[in-house]
Image 1: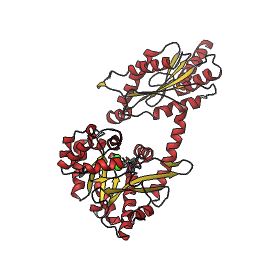
Image 2: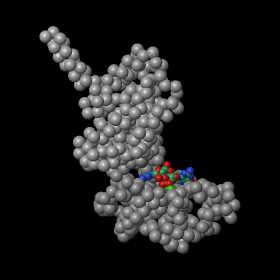
Image 3: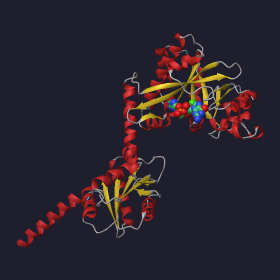
Length: 446
Ligand code: C2E
Ligand code: CA
Ligand code: CA
């Protein structure tokens, strides 16, 4: 009797322990166990070195949604089984949550050894795994946090591992990311910029966000033909943020479409202002991101903004980078055709950096080639015979396109461009990007 009670108690206990510390699906130690284990190593452990690896499956959500949770569960079980292969005496594997697994590594030699182990973990998944529904490819990524300063807490290490994972570019398969302290600052800065952008989208009159306008000059007549609108963001406490930084944040955080519409709206305000001052025929060009352009509603939204802002299409030009056009050539080129049909001109920005052959210009639905600053810089320290800048200009003309030079800073460049009949120039030699007021003063020759 006593024995059976004891046995019952033991079994019950074991079952409780099982429930509390092990994941039912995979049988691996769970998150609670992980926290306990890490805590133990960090506070009482004699081991000097402790690292945490976090493994994430990129395409798990899609698989789960496409084939159902049972299929998802089978995959998780397979993953756990595979991970079993790497348990060495100094590493322990856990199911963290969802499609995330963790490996705690103790007493390792150095960062290289950690990287090797990380690669070993990823290598387990480089071949498709077999499931009831056939073989399945998994896209995995891994982050690693070392307990460098001995004051790390369990919570902080887990948080840092997740942070390092979130920084991995999803296009990069089987990537390893080591946590670095700067990541946290970077993330905070990005959050701050995102917050500012959201505020500006909510309130179009918010002065943190504005456009600067850089004049473009017709080289033959010396007349200003228009401006390029360049986005500017000023964040309190962080100063002026480069558009290269905040545009990519807006892209990553799905704000670029709304921000792009705000830019069109502000451009409309500037065009109205120009008209009020008697400059009705000037053209303002706007930079457009690929994500904006490819959105289904781009054309209709864009036309609505033109209507509301009372912008005539011939006053507007869109600058699309060569890399955007090449990344999705057929689709983008078709979109450009539709835009051109509305009477809006298209300029191919940063031309020459994207490996499109000159002859391809013939098939592109563009009006203008904007030669990248790289080719304009070359004019300064190369002999004329070594330069292909003139060839780009003549090729553009051959296909009935206008040639624009950007980043012109010196007279030598002006002379060369004039000699080879470049149509339009833009750069600090003519003027830096200006505020609305200064742009009008510039036109007035003040
Ligand atoms: P981009 O379109 O190639 O713009 C030209 C950049 O060169 C601008 O930098 C401009 O201020 C700068 N620049 C102009 N003349 C000179 C010069 O003579 N010398 C030098 N060193 N630089 C010159 P910015 O304003 O910092 O813009 C950087 C990039 O950010 C732009 O390159 C464009 O790709 C992106 N960007 C700016 N505004 C917008 C926008 O409204 N929407 C989108 N999607 N991207 C934008
Ligand atoms: Ca541009
Ligand atoms: Ca450019």
